[in-house]
Amino acid sequence: MTILEFLDYLAIAVFAATGALAASRKQLDLIGFIFLAAITGIGGGTFRDVILGELPVFWVRNPNYMLVCLASGIIVYFGAHLIESRYRLLLWLDAIGLSAYAALGAAKGLAATGSPVVAIVTGMLTAAFGGVLRDIVAGEPSVLLRPEVYVSAALAGAAVFTAADAMGFGQIICFAAAMLTAFVIRGGALRYGWTFPVYKGRPGRDPKDVM
Image 1 (cartoon, rainbow, N blue to C red):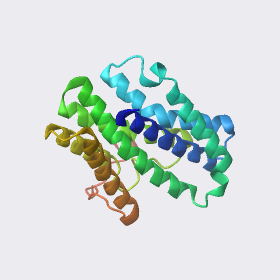
Image 2: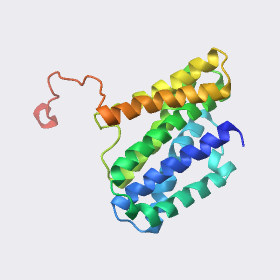
Image 3: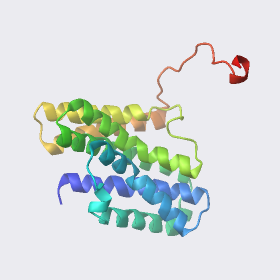
C-alpha cells in the first residue's frame, strides 16, 4: 500500500467516523449511521473526482472505500455511548481528516493537471466538502459558519503540499508538512479560538425593506 492509498483510507475512515458521531447525536438508527458515515467519508473525494473529470469516481472504481465507511458507521454505532463529549471528538477527528484530505486532494489535483492552482483548490475542496455535507444532512451547525478557522486550514495545507512538491521534496515530506500545517492551524483554532477579523460594516438591509 502506497502512502497515497494509506492517507486515502485514513481520511475516509476518520471523516466517516465524524458522520457517524453526528448520527449518534441525532439518535438515528444503524442505517442512519452508515448513511451519514458514507456521505461524509466519500463526499469530498467524490466532489474532487467530478471536478477533475476522473470518472467513474474513486469509490466506484474501488468499492473498498465504501466498506471503510460501512465499518466506521457500525463501530461508532456500537461504541458512541462510551464517549462523553461526542461533539468535541467530532471536531478533533474532523481536524485530522481535514489535514489528510487537504494533502491528498492537492496531490491528486497536481497529478491530474500539473497545475499548482488547481492542486490547492482541489485540496481545499476535498478537505472541506465532506464536513459541509455532514452538517447539512445532520442539521448540525455548519463548520463553515463556526467562528474558528476551518477552510483556511485546508487551504494552507494544500498550499504547503504544492510548494514542497515544487521544491523537489519527497512524497512523504510533502504529505507530512501539509498535514502538520493544516492540523496545527485547525487544532489551534479549536483550542485557542483563532479567527480572522469579521465584517463589521453596516449590516445588509432586510429584503422586505427594498421591495
